[in-house]
Image 1 (spheres, one colour):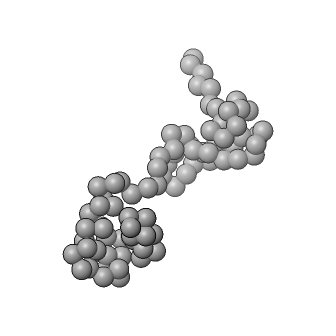
Image 2 (cartoon, one colour):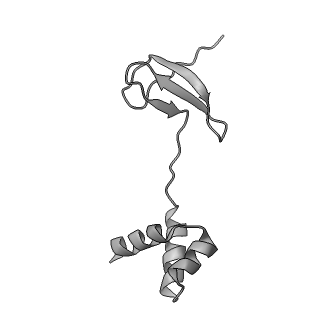
Length: 87
């Protein structure tokens, strides 16, 4: 039998127990030392750089912020923040 040791991503403790499943099916864990939850193999929530450039290019083509929100499914506030960073 193979035992897998799970380590807390926040405090590097091995005092971790299973704590249910996330909506995407990944296992959730609870650290008894720092009392924080984490998931196995966490991923990034950021938009990929090529998708971000595609949306900014559409804005430069005179698309409205509301139109971009409907077309690409991204928040107007997110596009506005990207525009401020790119200046």
